[in-house]
Image 1 (cartoon, one colour):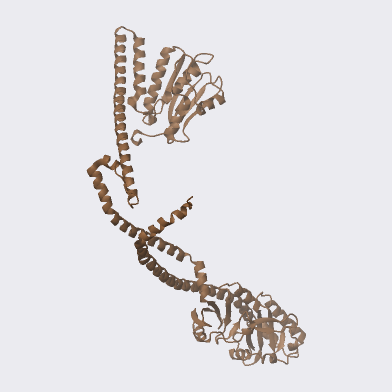
Image 2 (cartoon, rainbow, N blue to C red):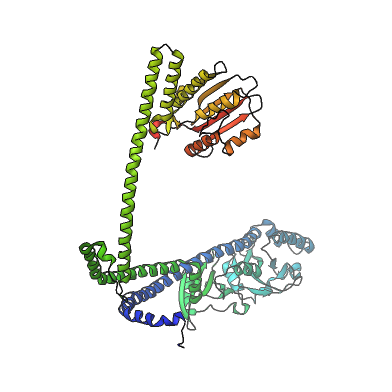
Length: 609
């Protein structure tokens, strides 16, 4: 028994043959699509990467500038505390007190002044360094001898500043009343206001470096997050790694450009890796806030922040794919044009019968086209037959319409003849009945139109009630009142007649008195028209009145006559004509009569479609 392979294996040879036949297309795809697309995407990637890196670094610079402003705010609070003490007359008065004054009182007054300054949350400690001859210089909490400062590296700068504020780098300070801490100090020399050449002391306001660390630690520019502060000489003032404080910042070749510029972005190669250095100046100091970010992380953030490149690549690929489709279609159409022309000439020359008998060759690439044309011809035949049948039916409908127009004319002429015979014989009552009946037919038929004016509909209701008064004399009265403004509006034909018919036959005729009155009103309700038909007949329960509009009912009456128009049908016609929210509403109660309201949109004939 011959082994039967799966279907997908049996289709592989045909697939390979198709690939070989399409080798020219594949080569054209590689040459005209893949190679240009690859070059375009590579160029776009290079350009977009450079632009995105530039935009991201600018964003980082804005972040650094904002961080510098926040840091400046913290430093300004410390500077303001130093300035307030520096401008305090009490401080100089206490410092100028001679040694003959009781030192405890002087120290008490000075401590009170310094404790007020320490209420600033940015101030870690306020220290006052005075002449060694002062008895309270050895207090070691807020008061110290000035000689202890001479070993500090920044002390010469304080003397050179001559009273101006000098910011120190981060250093570790020993406190006897609390744990040792790393601080940054605002230092300035004090001079006696009465004798400016006389040295009065040194004021130091300490700021805990954790205040700066917590502020700069919230800035996340990269995983490494190398954010630090340098002074005007390029030395590191603050760094998360305390071992680097006081050392020159790296790379050294950038220091001169950073120190000389207010803010900017610099690029340098360090250990084989491209790094970006983003920096900004901190006002009221000679410091700069510096951030080092590897270029690789900027590229990664750029891709994360900007998804436009992916959309652009997708759009480019889509455009190239469409170009491929157009190119392939051009080749296909060019190759198929000759065969298509042969098929078209065969159709024109040999007709449909020859095409039906045409034997399509197996294995040809145009089999689908030939079979489609064959199928199309069969469809054309069928459509021609259907068109002919439709024209025959249309003709028959036109003949029936003409006959329908003739029949009413014949009816009107016959009734008119009977009317004149009755007038000639003095039968006035018969003449009135015939005349009313003719009007009724003329209004109800309305030349085959489905829409009538409110005036015609009211006339039809009046004619119907006139006929019924002749049929049931002395059994009911009716009145019709209408606002002249609503007479020209259009409405569906035969809307009121079923309602007044129900009011007469099911309301007044079934009442215990057997008599009653019917009232018809028409008025404008905003942009709508409201017709009301009310009677004082038998009435009905509310449940039965509600069912009249929700359930279709047979309108066959006790006398054998019937009507194809019930309240349900009238309601549905009004809703189809005017939309939801319009139609009939019924109010009734047993023994008190029934009121039916008809609400529809006010539309004039010129606005009808």
